[in-house]
Image 1 (cartoon, rainbow, N blue to C red):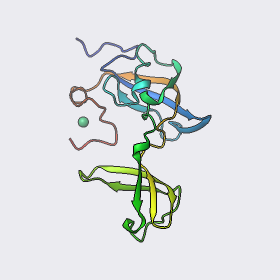
Image 2 (cartoon, rainbow, N blue to C red):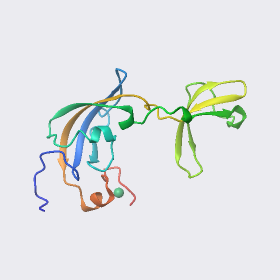
Image 3 (cartoon, rainbow, N blue to C red):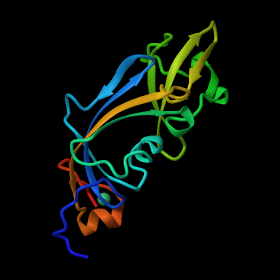
Image 4 (cartoon, rainbow, N blue to C red):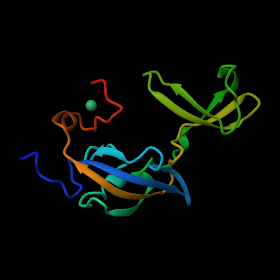
Length: 167
Ligand code: ZN
C-alpha cells in the first residue's frame, strides 16, 4: 500500500470532509454553513449510521440527498424515556418550566440531557429522548475533500482535528 495514492472516492478508512444540511419536518435544524465542513473517518460509526451507509463511492464534488429513518438516526421515540420526578428534587436555581432543557449526570458521570415536558403541583415530567428521536432525518451532503488518515487516526478510529485530542 502506498500513501501517495490519490483518493477519488469515499470508502472505509478514508477521512472525508463534507458539507451538510440536516432538515427535519421541513425545517433546517443543523448545517455546516457556520462552522465549515465536518471531517470524519468513514466506516467507524462516527456519524449517523443511516447516513454513513450511503456515502461509499461518492466522489469529491458530488452531492447526495439521504433520508434516514428514525431507527437509523437518533432512534425511535421511547415512552419509557419519559420519567416522572418529584418537584422537590429539583435544585432551587433551576427554572422548572415546560420546554426547559436540563443537563445532568448519571451514576457513571455521563452527561444526560432531558427536556421538561410538563410541570404539575408536585411532579415534573422529564423527557430523556434525544430531541430528534422518532424523526425522519433528511441530509443534503456534498463531499468536499478526501485524505488518508494518519496511522494514529486509523488506530483510534476517528479523526484528530484541529481541536486536538488529549490521547
Ligand atoms: Zn484519538
